[in-house]
Image 1 (cartoon, rainbow, N blue to C red):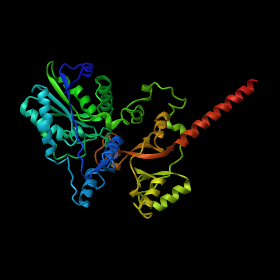
Image 2: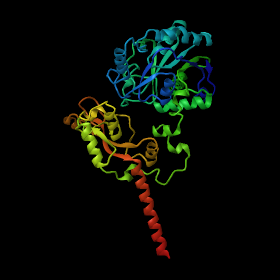
Image 3: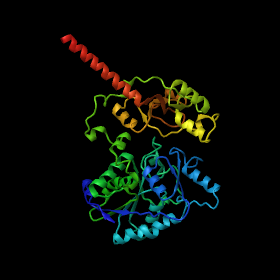
Image 4: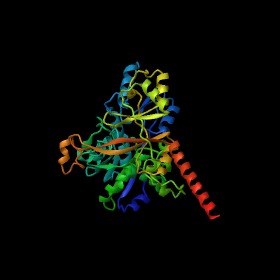
Amino acid sequence: MVRMNKIPNAFGLKCELCIGLALAAAVKGYRCIIVMPEKMSMEKVDVLRALGAEIVRTPTSARFDSPESHVGVAWRLKNEIPNAHILDQYRNPSNPLAHYDTTAEEILEQCDGKIDMLVAGAGTGGTITGVARKLKEKCPNIKIVGVDPEGSILAEPEELNKTDKTQYEVEGIGYDFIPTVLDRSVVDSWYKSNDEESFAMSRMLIREEGLLCGGSSGTAMSAAVHVAKELKEGQRCVVILPDSIRNYMSKFLSDKWMCEKGFLSEEDLFVKKPWWWNLTLQELRLSAPLTVLPLVSIKKTIQILKEKAFDQAPVVDEAGHILGMVTLGNMLSSVLAGKVRPSDPISKVLYKQFKQVRLTDNLGKLSRILETDHFALVVHEQIQLDDVSSLNCSSCLTDMSDGSPKMRQMVFGVVTAIDLLNYVATRERRERSLSECSLSEEQ
């Protein structure tokens, strides 16, 4: 256990605030295949590969019950590979039992059996379920607080989960289904967290307390500094920090990454910016984008992109809603590798992990994105009515229930580094010409 010093004081807490540090061990000797969503950090991938594991990535946006999800792919591999086994942390009864027998006992021992509140994030639910069961036996008056990110559905009551968000950046907690091992009856209340608070608190834990923790640790701690305010002086709150910074060195530790995700503003960095930095994307005067429908063949799409000298194109449905992106390089490599046939529809090779910007975003944000990405998709939001009769409804702009208006993302354009460079170069040439003309007139 580690006693917090600076952060509780900064948030005006009177109670004692402690953190349980969880450790994980790698098991050697077996062929190991790790199936993980694309949003998981490259540090995790690199460490697992160094340990000899084979890595399979799946779309972050895939629902848990779809064949493309990490759960669906894992079960498919299990059925295809002889003598394969899935540890299945979502249903394995040993998951919460391990925390009941060990983690909870460690907390009780180090707190001398006196704990008034436990705050923990919920992923599979094994930690919070096992620890809470034991602590409620030993400390009947303890309050268990579960932390669930916005975009996840683990919290109760169900009203807490209502949000427009479908994805979040924090890893290791939250799901779009209820894991079998998660016993929500042992949780007294839930706190819904957001990425911005989580990563800001992770940085604060590192800077103020010297704890090299990860994003989900920041999630738990950001919740704790709010809910622990109801405790009195002398009472004790325990917070479980389940991850370390090792897996996130290129993510929230990076100012650049934080800026790209909108969790940190460029103004916070005190960097001298070029003249064009705060201008909006509207200045670029982008041309109408080439879009393709999902049923167009890969062969035809490659042909069109080559004719138009484009490297990528948005894929949209008949109504213009964004489905994903296809790139010339990805289509060609997929065909050459035998993963798809030229006659297959492009829906088989589209991907949904790409950067999006709006016309109101500044060119500085765009330049940050284009340092690592070849392009960004310019989108705008449009309110679309599923039922024309709802036009007469006075709340038609806010009512998002079935049969009422919904906010849709539409494609406005695709922007690349060439577009930005051309704009900057053209403006600077024009300024130089005007300056030279002005000097000539004065002479």
